[in-house]
Image (cartoon, rainbow, N blue to C red; front, side, top):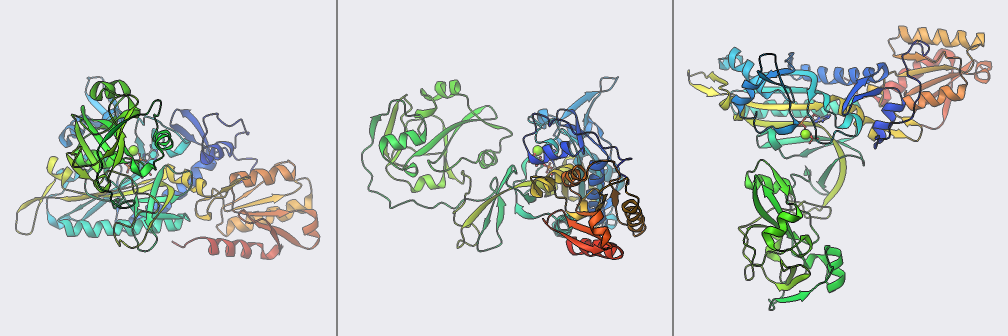
Length: 572
Ligand code: ATP
Ligand code: MG
């Protein structure tokens, strides 16, 4: 490809809503354009990256025994009614009606469609296991589409579904996918971690996320400094640990605490540390108020609360609701005398002479003791695990915390969908049994953004070689110089013949402009042909991720480029 022929839009001002590096750089490098909120057009450079990610994913899915299918984007409501998800999926689903007023949706995911197909077409254990996948647009009307490709309303996903005769079969399929995912992310050249995850609305009980590490990521993961344990904080079990010695219970006292609304304020006011306080939060779970208690220096984990209650939706209650229920505002809540269902984190049971709100504005109790002064409905694991916690698995190591981007997610679904949708088969004995399912997603477009969040500098993107739009860029410093152009043209055709993906910047621009653009777009290897190097029969070869260039004999340039590529990329 020649730069003069490339559809590369002129640089424009960055969109003001671009909050993340990847969003800004994808825009500036002319790779994407916004068509509507959370809906993007991929321009040629950007689409080359997408196709490369897709190719790697496709190769690994095929290698693991997956068979590619094309499922419809427009899905009839009936299928979602069968699975029971039409009503519970909520506002994230794009719904539409046809001319006969029949309900449809744009597929946010494809468990229903695929289970229906398999239900109709597969009837015997002889046809199982089956691993079917597709790579296609998904539609989710996210509350907050943001960060460009990271959280879109239309995005590209690879989704694979496994169908097995029993749990052992599922275990095998799951492991195959786990390994295939590791190969995918190794080949993409990304630094990632596999973590235990919550299975959320999709269902099932075992699930892992593939997290591309980046400070800008929305996911927080914890991992043990001693054993292999790693989990999303949404899921990570917290181990209760006492802070300080248990004290002899003292009599409760009510104290006047005017204007002390936050835990920090109150700590300073009473001269007590945060871990002596209890945080009291009111939630509404499927319309019913519940109260959550955690130690003052901890955070409530709403997903754990939701899972414990088996609720569809859990939301923080607004202040007016809280006042109506408790008689006080946010800053003065506490469990004593509260006539609501209270769930306390297990750590709260280890506290003594604690501080909490008195359910009366500007008053708190001190010397409150669990069991004596209030009795929760249950002590459960209700808090976020955090840096420094004891590891819940080896019970020796301590947890470390890091941030990242969830780019892949695998689930064991079991028989949740096959039972509801009647996807059964006849086993060897002629007995009818539900198929045992798994599902496995990779966000293709999100992975593109994640690759940038992990690989950039002040000049632009630094693509891992495996997914760069071009591997090599050839820059003749002056296109009007015949000798430079001759060398540039001959290297260009030599590299093309060798099967490399090469772009030549044949624009009549200053060298500085061309270097800037090459850096911004993130082409991994740059070959510069200038007057000085030519005198010595050489060209400059520079890696995007290194500062200095090397001088290489013209006839060694191809071998040099090949060596850089094979050193950098994990082979297929
Ligand atoms: P999240 O928690 O980020 O909303 P999810 O749990 O809803 O993700 P899955 O349903 O497991 O995501 O989808 C599989 C993969 O699809 C995710 O791992 C992610 O890479 C990608 N993905 C999900 N939602 C989006 C989105 N709105 N935009 C881009 N990619 C997405
Ligand atoms: Mg989601």
